Length: 429
Ligand SMILES: Cc1ncc(COP(=O)(O)O)c(C=O)c1O
Image 1: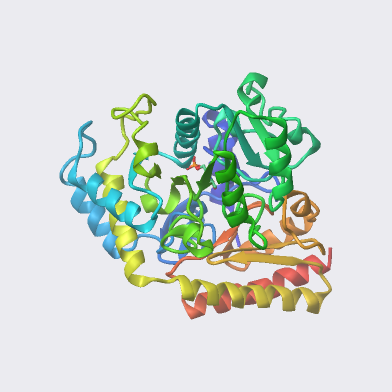
Image 2: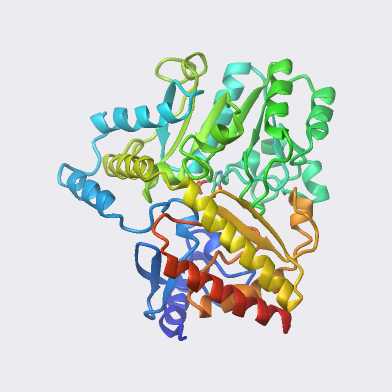
């Protein structure tokens, strides 16, 4: 397999782009080598500029749940394009997508569309503060909520618990109201409430996907919600990754927990830049123009993005692929575990619906600290062997692999064959 053209573009890209990428997760810093440049994608496959074709388990980090260029989505986008690209005024399709989203999440009477998951979360946090009149927010180590200052706190390390900025350029003042708790550990949340009386709410990924896949244990989400209610604080559920992916109504539907504020992104835009935050009426009525919390966006509710979102969600509801996702994820899990055993490689596999990934560790992974015991060098070897065997994986141990409903039995066979070869390569390190 050749990567010559990707290599050339990478070198060219370095001149005027930062690291030749527009998002650091696309760089290959933790697996070595240079990022692949993509030419096109269709269905379950993605093709790079050298003509190599892969089964895509990245799916643009989640949005492409139907696979690439689904016929109905493409038709809807093409139709919308004929009417214009952006108006700075309302359109019928914004109302239509809002209804689909609010119907899927019982805790949402109203929704506001924005342009990314980051925007959805930063607005959701502002709303929680506006509604409660309190400033502090608890987040969990290892959960990622976009690149807003207040939540870019080093996750999982000792520094994290001290709320030191995790990125240069984030002033300490911006994170002074951010408190860090441990995922799956309600006691660590309670400790913060005992120490502070100005906590507006807790934000979390209901199933974490940004430290690899980590699921809520026992009744963590339900108990958290009950506890927060007793404290008059809000539960802000970041379903940017899990919304419409783990179930049509998100992880909240699966775990039977209702958020006070829900943040969405990725799948609702069907590959276009859409984020959203929503809540029950009394909370959303704080948002301008109804209330005093200001939040705005020139391109918010963009007509092309709305068309992509509506057609993606409509098709997704019709396909209802969630059972199929579970079955495929289970097949992949069994294969990972069996081939790891066969070659004497220690792994733990976590999965939830259409999100799955192996951790190269012998520990059970229930939080960021556990995830960090993984051998990232082994993941790098595994990653490159999978690439060479035609499977496109995220270039990081700490990202979920995503499944699309476009996967065929042949694709699954190819994935399992690649797993076997890649695990063998790891065993020879
Ligand atoms: C859970 C979660 N929240 C927020 C974000 C930020 O979304 P975006 O990259 O669209 O700004 C991400 C991105 O991966 C995410 O996974």
